[in-house]
Structures are given as structure tokens and as C-alpha cells.
Image 1 (spheres, rainbow, N blue to C red):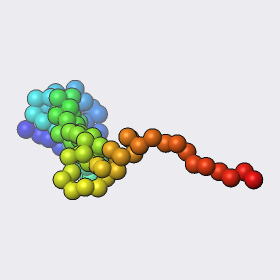
Image 2 (image 1 turned 120 degrees about the vertical axis):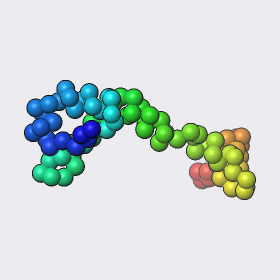
Image 3 (image 1 turned 180 degrees about the vertical axis):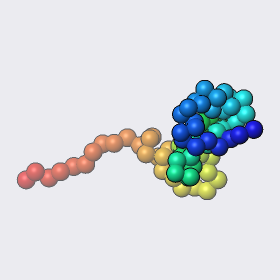
Length: 90
């Protein structure tokens, strides 16, 4: 099954390009002999997007760190009251 299309052909047969992306996977469209874009189904796009999405926030990862460090700093700065500082105006 064809998966690479020249731009002119892809424009002329766009419905077929879309159908093949849905049924058979990503379709490459070339311009001047070089890959320019990929046509993918929404299902494939969402699957790829979910695979690259971070699973945990940075704060959660730091809190799970076995070594003391930034996680402790985060905890201390959140719990410590801020009284400001004294300034001598004389």
C-alpha cells in the first residue's frame, strides 16, 4: 500500500490520502523530493500525543527523589512563615 505522495498527487487525491491514513497508517507528502508533512488519523495523533505527555508533575517527581535536596527546599519554603525583614529608617 502506498504511503508516500508527491504534493501535486496528494492535492489531487486528498480523499484517498486521508482514507489511507485512517486505514493504513501515516502518509508522507513530499515537496521537491523531500518529506514535507505527514497525514495521520486523529486516533494515531492522540496515541502519539499520549505517549509523549509527562505522567507526573515536576513537583511530584522532586518529592519522590530519594536524596534530600530540592524536595526538602520545596517543603520548607511552603511551610515557613514570611515575616519580612526589619529596615532601619533612621
